[in-house]
Length: 166
Picture 1 (spheres, rainbow, N blue to C red):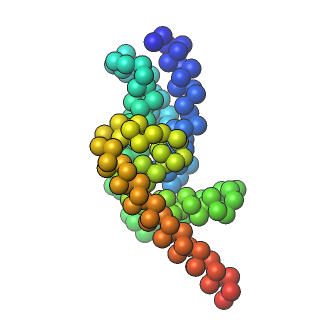
Picture 2 (cartoon, rainbow, N blue to C red; picture 1 turned 120 degrees about the horizontal axis):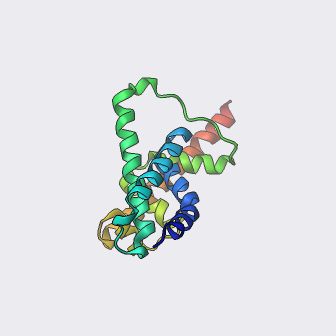
Picture 3 (tube, one colour; picture 1 turned 90 degrees about the vertical axis):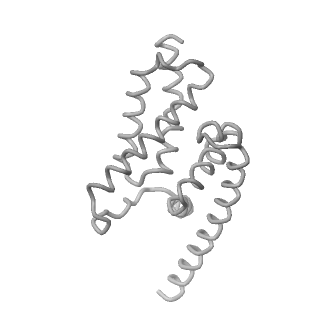
């Protein structure tokens, strides 16, 4: 693959990369750092990719590792009580609730949901990206959906009671 082809394919993936980061990291600045660092690393090591068909899988794997690095650094540098609240964005309330519920899921359940339902990867592709068997992906999708449903129902009840009592 030539440098120009590599650049075009990576450029086409940037929205996907930001959406995956959105499910991993709370702050916009961390998401931007993760994507930028991922692109830098992939550009530097583009010659190590053996099969061009796996470019997207490889880049997402690098991105997930970068997100984990950012989360590890954040744990070491900030006490839990000093973590600022998530900034309010101009998104519809339903999207904010879904995002908040997604962030409450364990990463093992969250990533298959994001990759499969939000990014459109097949179960086999998700298994390849996460390096787990397909059966594990299916189980995590089912458990993640169940927990997400419970979290959203809980949020719905909390909103209802706060509106009726407030």
